[in-house]
Image (cartoon, rainbow, N blue to C red; front, side, top):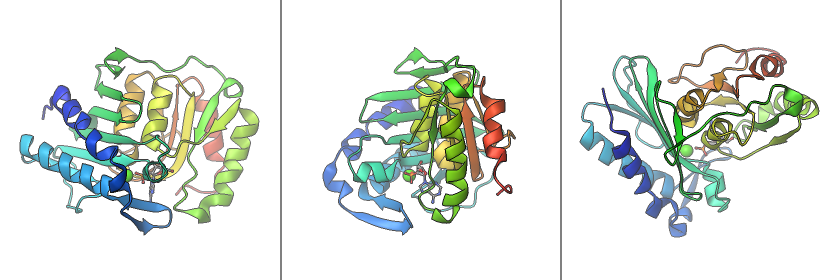
Length: 262
Ligand code: 2AM
Ligand code: CA
Protein backbone atom coordinates (compact mmCIF):
# COMPACT_ATOMS: atom_id res chain seq x y z
CA UNK A 1 0.00 0.00 0.00
CA UNK A 2 1.22 3.54 -0.75
CA UNK A 3 0.41 6.51 1.42
CA UNK A 4 0.91 10.13 0.53
CA UNK A 5 3.29 11.63 3.12
CA UNK A 6 2.16 15.16 2.19
CA UNK A 7 -1.45 14.22 2.88
CA UNK A 8 -0.60 12.61 6.23
CA UNK A 9 1.46 15.69 7.17
CA UNK A 10 -1.42 18.01 6.34
CA UNK A 11 -3.81 15.94 8.48
CA UNK A 12 -1.30 16.03 11.36
CA UNK A 13 -0.97 19.84 11.08
CA UNK A 14 -4.75 20.07 11.33
CA UNK A 15 -4.66 18.46 14.80
CA UNK A 16 -3.02 21.58 16.26
CA UNK A 17 -6.43 23.16 17.04
CA UNK A 18 -7.17 20.15 19.26
CA UNK A 19 -3.70 19.64 20.80
CA UNK A 20 -3.37 23.27 21.87
CA UNK A 21 -6.91 23.63 23.25
CA UNK A 22 -6.33 23.83 27.01
CA UNK A 23 -10.07 23.41 27.72
CA UNK A 24 -9.93 19.88 26.29
CA UNK A 25 -7.01 18.93 28.54
CA UNK A 26 -9.23 19.47 31.60
CA UNK A 27 -11.14 16.22 31.04
CA UNK A 28 -8.73 13.60 32.33
CA UNK A 29 -9.25 9.95 33.22
CA UNK A 30 -6.66 7.46 34.47
CA UNK A 31 -6.42 4.20 32.46
CA UNK A 32 -3.82 2.80 34.81
CA UNK A 33 -1.25 4.09 37.25
CA UNK A 34 0.26 7.33 35.80
CA UNK A 35 -1.37 6.41 32.48
CA UNK A 36 -3.81 9.17 31.54
CA UNK A 37 -6.17 10.02 28.70
CA UNK A 38 -7.65 13.47 28.00
CA UNK A 39 -10.20 14.77 25.51
CA UNK A 40 -7.22 15.89 23.41
CA UNK A 41 -6.03 12.26 23.06
CA UNK A 42 -9.49 11.03 22.08
CA UNK A 43 -10.20 14.09 19.89
CA UNK A 44 -7.00 13.65 17.86
CA UNK A 45 -7.54 9.88 17.62
CA UNK A 46 -11.14 10.34 16.39
CA UNK A 47 -10.13 13.00 13.84
CA UNK A 48 -7.17 11.09 12.37
CA UNK A 49 -8.95 7.73 12.43
CA UNK A 50 -11.91 9.19 10.53
CA UNK A 51 -9.79 11.10 7.99
CA UNK A 52 -7.26 8.30 7.40
CA UNK A 53 -9.74 5.47 7.06
CA UNK A 54 -11.81 7.56 4.62
CA UNK A 55 -8.71 7.96 2.43
CA UNK A 56 -7.25 4.49 2.92
CA UNK A 57 -10.27 2.17 3.23
CA UNK A 58 -9.40 -1.38 4.23
CA UNK A 59 -6.33 -0.25 6.17
CA UNK A 60 -6.19 -1.42 9.76
CA UNK A 61 -5.73 1.11 12.53
CA UNK A 62 -3.78 0.27 15.68
CA UNK A 63 -4.35 3.34 17.84
CA UNK A 64 -3.69 3.83 21.53
CA UNK A 65 -7.09 5.35 22.27
CA UNK A 66 -9.28 3.67 19.67
CA UNK A 67 -11.33 0.51 19.97
CA UNK A 68 -9.07 -2.53 19.81
CA UNK A 69 -9.52 -4.60 16.66
CA UNK A 70 -7.97 -7.92 15.75
CA UNK A 71 -4.87 -6.98 13.72
CA UNK A 72 -3.73 -9.02 10.73
CA UNK A 73 0.07 -8.48 10.54
CA UNK A 74 0.02 -9.39 6.85
CA UNK A 75 -2.15 -6.39 5.97
CA UNK A 76 -1.32 -2.67 6.00
CA UNK A 77 -1.53 -1.12 9.48
CA UNK A 78 -1.56 2.52 10.57
CA UNK A 79 -0.02 2.71 14.06
CA UNK A 80 -1.23 5.86 15.82
CA UNK A 81 -0.50 7.58 19.11
CA UNK A 82 -2.72 10.67 19.03
CA UNK A 83 -0.68 12.21 21.88
CA UNK A 84 2.61 10.74 23.03
CA UNK A 85 3.45 12.55 26.26
CA UNK A 86 -0.01 12.88 27.80
CA UNK A 87 1.27 13.70 31.30
CA UNK A 88 3.36 16.51 29.75
CA UNK A 89 0.23 17.75 27.96
CA UNK A 90 -1.77 17.82 31.21
CA UNK A 91 1.00 19.90 32.82
CA UNK A 92 1.41 22.15 29.74
CA UNK A 93 5.05 20.99 29.67
CA UNK A 94 5.05 21.39 25.87
CA UNK A 95 6.82 18.16 25.05
CA UNK A 96 4.21 15.99 23.36
CA UNK A 97 3.75 14.73 19.84
CA UNK A 98 1.31 13.13 17.41
CA UNK A 99 2.91 9.91 16.17
CA UNK A 100 1.83 7.96 13.09
CA UNK A 101 3.52 5.07 11.27
CA UNK A 102 2.44 2.93 8.34
CA UNK A 103 3.46 -0.73 8.68
CA UNK A 104 3.26 -2.73 5.45
CA UNK A 105 4.99 -5.84 4.16
CA UNK A 106 6.52 -6.62 7.55
CA UNK A 107 8.15 -3.23 8.17
CA UNK A 108 7.49 0.44 8.86
CA UNK A 109 7.47 2.23 5.50
CA UNK A 110 6.31 5.77 6.35
CA UNK A 111 6.41 7.81 9.57
CA UNK A 112 5.49 11.24 10.80
CA UNK A 113 5.94 12.65 14.31
CA UNK A 114 4.54 16.15 14.81
CA UNK A 115 5.24 18.32 17.85
CA UNK A 116 2.65 21.14 17.73
CA UNK A 117 4.39 23.08 20.51
CA UNK A 118 7.64 23.52 18.60
CA UNK A 119 6.05 23.35 15.12
CA UNK A 120 8.41 20.49 14.26
CA UNK A 121 7.31 17.90 11.70
CA UNK A 122 9.57 14.85 11.51
CA UNK A 123 9.06 12.56 8.52
CA UNK A 124 10.68 9.47 7.06
CA UNK A 125 10.09 7.03 4.26
CA UNK A 126 11.86 3.67 4.08
CA UNK A 127 15.20 4.16 2.29
CA UNK A 128 14.31 7.83 1.69
CA UNK A 129 16.02 9.49 4.64
CA UNK A 130 14.61 11.41 7.62
CA UNK A 131 13.58 15.07 7.62
CA UNK A 132 12.70 17.84 10.05
CA UNK A 133 10.41 20.43 8.43
CA UNK A 134 11.70 19.25 5.05
CA UNK A 135 15.42 19.41 5.91
CA UNK A 136 17.45 16.18 6.01
CA UNK A 137 18.56 15.18 9.53
CA UNK A 138 21.35 12.97 10.90
CA UNK A 139 22.36 11.50 14.24
CA UNK A 140 25.43 12.70 16.18
CA UNK A 141 28.89 11.29 15.60
CA UNK A 142 29.66 10.86 19.31
CA UNK A 143 31.85 7.77 19.58
CA UNK A 144 31.83 6.89 23.28
CA UNK A 145 29.24 6.59 26.06
CA UNK A 146 31.40 8.80 28.29
CA UNK A 147 30.88 11.71 25.87
CA UNK A 148 27.17 10.91 25.35
CA UNK A 149 23.97 12.58 26.52
CA UNK A 150 21.41 9.81 27.09
CA UNK A 151 17.63 10.07 27.58
CA UNK A 152 15.96 7.61 29.90
CA UNK A 153 12.30 6.65 30.25
CA UNK A 154 11.20 5.89 33.79
CA UNK A 155 8.10 3.71 33.06
CA UNK A 156 5.99 5.59 35.66
CA UNK A 157 3.05 3.23 35.07
CA UNK A 158 5.11 0.26 36.30
CA UNK A 159 6.71 1.44 39.54
CA UNK A 160 7.43 -2.16 40.52
CA UNK A 161 10.27 -2.00 37.97
CA UNK A 162 11.80 1.08 39.62
CA UNK A 163 14.63 -0.61 41.54
CA UNK A 164 16.02 -2.41 38.51
CA UNK A 165 15.36 0.56 36.21
CA UNK A 166 17.12 3.04 38.44
CA UNK A 167 20.08 0.72 38.94
CA UNK A 168 20.55 0.83 35.16
CA UNK A 169 20.01 4.61 35.10
CA UNK A 170 22.64 5.07 37.84
CA UNK A 171 25.13 3.08 35.78
CA UNK A 172 24.37 5.14 32.67
CA UNK A 173 24.55 8.39 34.61
CA UNK A 174 27.96 7.47 36.00
CA UNK A 175 29.31 6.32 32.63
CA UNK A 176 27.89 9.10 30.41
CA UNK A 177 28.02 12.88 30.20
CA UNK A 178 24.53 13.17 31.76
CA UNK A 179 20.98 11.90 31.47
CA UNK A 180 17.69 13.53 30.35
CA UNK A 181 14.01 12.58 30.84
CA UNK A 182 11.42 14.08 28.47
CA UNK A 183 8.24 12.06 29.16
CA UNK A 184 7.59 11.25 25.48
CA UNK A 185 9.23 8.24 23.84
CA UNK A 186 8.38 9.49 20.33
CA UNK A 187 10.12 12.78 21.12
CA UNK A 188 13.14 10.97 22.63
CA UNK A 189 13.53 8.96 19.42
CA UNK A 190 13.41 12.03 17.18
CA UNK A 191 15.82 13.83 19.53
CA UNK A 192 18.35 11.06 18.83
CA UNK A 193 17.52 11.27 15.09
CA UNK A 194 18.18 15.01 14.89
CA UNK A 195 21.31 14.85 17.04
CA UNK A 196 20.05 16.61 20.20
CA UNK A 197 20.99 13.57 22.29
CA UNK A 198 23.09 10.47 21.56
CA UNK A 199 20.86 7.68 22.89
CA UNK A 200 17.63 6.72 24.64
CA UNK A 201 16.34 3.73 26.58
CA UNK A 202 12.99 2.80 28.13
CA UNK A 203 11.45 -0.50 29.13
CA UNK A 204 8.28 -2.09 27.84
CA UNK A 205 7.01 0.52 25.39
CA UNK A 206 3.96 -0.04 23.20
CA UNK A 207 4.01 -0.05 19.36
CA UNK A 208 2.35 3.40 19.14
CA UNK A 209 5.04 4.89 21.43
CA UNK A 210 7.98 3.88 19.22
CA UNK A 211 6.90 2.68 15.74
CA UNK A 212 7.05 6.07 13.98
CA UNK A 213 10.16 7.29 15.80
CA UNK A 214 11.92 4.03 15.02
CA UNK A 215 11.89 4.61 11.24
CA UNK A 216 12.77 8.31 11.63
CA UNK A 217 15.80 7.35 13.71
CA UNK A 218 17.00 4.53 11.48
CA UNK A 219 16.62 6.74 8.38
CA UNK A 220 18.71 9.38 10.19
CA UNK A 221 21.52 6.83 10.55
CA UNK A 222 20.70 5.58 14.06
CA UNK A 223 19.98 2.13 15.46
CA UNK A 224 16.94 0.84 17.40
CA UNK A 225 16.97 -2.54 19.15
CA UNK A 226 15.72 -4.07 22.37
CA UNK A 227 17.96 -3.90 25.46
CA UNK A 228 19.90 -6.93 24.26
CA UNK A 229 20.64 -5.62 20.78
CA UNK A 230 17.98 -7.75 19.06
CA UNK A 231 15.64 -6.51 16.32
CA UNK A 232 12.36 -4.96 17.47
CA UNK A 233 8.95 -6.09 16.20
CA UNK A 234 7.00 -2.82 15.72
CA UNK A 235 3.71 -4.64 16.41
CA UNK A 236 4.67 -5.91 19.89
CA UNK A 237 5.57 -4.30 23.23
CA UNK A 238 9.33 -3.93 23.53
CA UNK A 239 12.15 -2.52 25.61
CA UNK A 240 13.76 0.12 23.40
CA UNK A 241 17.44 0.95 23.16
CA UNK A 242 18.09 3.68 20.59
CA UNK A 243 21.34 5.37 19.68
CA UNK A 244 23.44 7.09 17.05
CA UNK A 245 24.85 3.62 16.23
CA UNK A 246 28.42 4.37 17.33
CA UNK A 247 27.63 3.83 21.02
CA UNK A 248 25.09 1.04 20.48
CA UNK A 249 27.20 -2.00 21.33
CA UNK A 250 28.46 -0.50 24.57
CA UNK A 251 24.95 0.74 25.48
CA UNK A 252 23.62 -2.83 25.20
CA UNK A 253 25.83 -3.55 28.22
CA UNK A 254 23.49 -1.45 30.36
CA UNK A 255 20.46 -3.34 29.09
CA UNK A 256 22.22 -6.62 29.79
CA UNK A 257 22.52 -5.68 33.43
CA UNK A 258 18.82 -6.49 33.77
CA UNK A 259 18.39 -9.78 35.59
CA UNK A 260 16.12 -11.36 33.00
CA UNK A 261 14.51 -10.59 29.68
CA UNK A 262 10.91 -9.40 29.99
P1 2AM B 1 1.84 8.28 26.41
O1 2AM B 1 2.18 9.65 26.86
O2 2AM B 1 1.28 8.19 25.05
O3 2AM B 1 0.98 7.56 27.42
C1 2AM B 1 6.70 7.95 29.14
O4 2AM B 1 7.55 7.20 29.95
C2 2AM B 1 6.44 7.23 27.83
O5 2AM B 1 5.80 5.97 28.10
C3 2AM B 1 5.50 7.99 26.95
O6 2AM B 1 5.88 7.79 25.61
C4 2AM B 1 4.16 7.36 27.29
O7 2AM B 1 3.21 7.45 26.26
C5 2AM B 1 4.54 5.93 27.46
N1 2AM B 1 3.54 5.18 28.26
C6 2AM B 1 2.63 5.68 29.12
N2 2AM B 1 1.89 4.71 29.69
C7 2AM B 1 2.35 3.56 29.17
C8 2AM B 1 2.02 2.19 29.36
N3 2AM B 1 1.06 1.79 30.19
N4 2AM B 1 2.73 1.26 28.68
C9 2AM B 1 3.71 1.65 27.84
N5 2AM B 1 4.07 2.92 27.61
C10 2AM B 1 3.40 3.87 28.26
CA1 CA C 1 -0.64 8.31 23.97
